[in-house]
Image: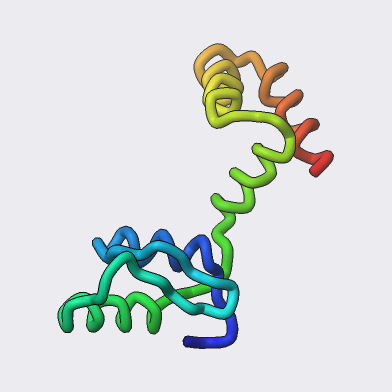
Length: 101
């Protein structure tokens, strides 16, 4: 495992690959709920080799939403009001709040 790992992201990648992952440590150690089959081990090795620890812009945005006490529904509503109705008040308030974080 490389020295650089994003535990939450790798955990999700392994889970998305259908592997019985229980946890991933900051050092990259992966714990499974059972021993992997040879095929699963090959899949795990591929997922780990392809793992990019860089957090996506989307993940950063979602984290900022949480810190600001906002939800995806808040964003959706502000977007709807802005695009469909031309009312930018909710969007502007959301952006103002997000810029504090």
